[in-house]
Every structure is written in structure tokens, then in C-alpha cells.
Amino acid sequence: MSVLEFIQQPWPWYVVGPLIALTMFLLLWFGREFGMSATLRTMCAASGGGKYSDFFKFDWKSQKWNLVFALGTILGGTISTLFLEPDTSVNLAESTVQSLQEMGIENPGESYLPMEMFGPEAFDLTGIIYLFIGGILIGFGARYAGGCTSGHAISGLSNLQLPSLIAVIGFFIGGLAMTYFILPYILPF
Image (tube, rainbow, N blue to C red; front, side):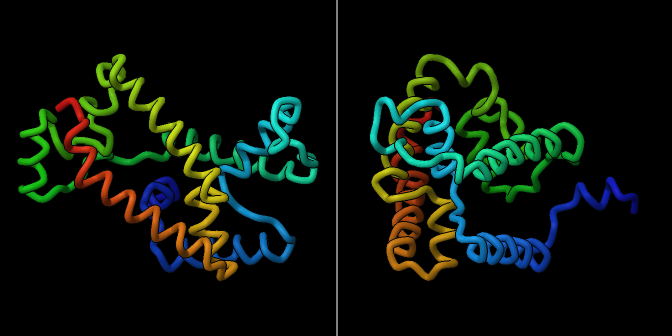
């Protein structure tokens, strides 16, 4: 197996789990908090958001590492998509294939992101409105919950914070409710 073939394979949980734990240990050791909403707040403060809201008035230079983290996330995603992505076909159960075909997806399992849901034709006015409303709800939810899913689920739970546990339970309940009770009624297919 070549190095490229090795890198293209999903890393097993017993490698990734300890790497996440090590990352969290280092963040805690150096007094840092992890979360994408904190990164967004740092970006807004660096861009002058403090002129418009007191929420962005803080020493963003002490949080520069958040900006490096966001850049690394973008670069890592780009590199893995362009150079490391193996065959993207998905082995789906026959019942799932049938359900997806009934919803209008022509080749279920051909890729992780079906063109009917994520291609250019999916981004009509209705799709853009869904994205806009979803973005507002996510932004409001992250602010109301005092952090985003990654911040609460990884950083907050690592710190044994009860509010993070409650938030994560709420995220899962909300995600399940959306998936099974709301999304099937608002998707156009």
C-alpha cells in the first residue's frame, strides 16, 4: 500500500480519538477554548465588529490562534478534497436506495453528495432561502447556547461542564427532530 493510498483511507477511531484528546489536553493546558463560533467572533472583532456591537469588543489579538485554526480547517478541507479523496461511492442498504430513488435521487450511493441535493440546480431561490434561514437559526442558536456544537461537544464536555452536556443533548434532539419530522416536509423532492 502506497502512502497516498494509506492517507486516503479513513483513520480508525483508536488513532483519531487519542489525537482529539491530545489536542483538547493541549488547549486546556494553555488555557484556550475550542469552537468555530469563537473563531467567527474573533474574525468579526478583527474586522472592526466592536464598532457595532459590544459582543465584539475584546482583545482579539490574544485569540489569533483561532484565525490560524480556521485557515488550517479551510486548507485541510481543500487539500483533502482535491488530492486525497478516494472513490466517493457509498455502500447503502437496499431500502435506503429505494427511499432515495422515491425522493428523486437518480443514482443513490454514487457519491456522498448527490447532485440533486448539492448540485447547482439545488441552489434555486428556495434553496438559497433555506440556507439563509438555516444560517440565521444556527447563528442564533450558537449565540443563545453560548457556543457552537464543536465548542460544547468537544471543549465543554472535556471540561466536564454541565451546560455543555445539556447543550449537546439539545443539539442531538434538535437534529433528530429536524431529520425525521421537519426536513421530509420542506425538501422539494
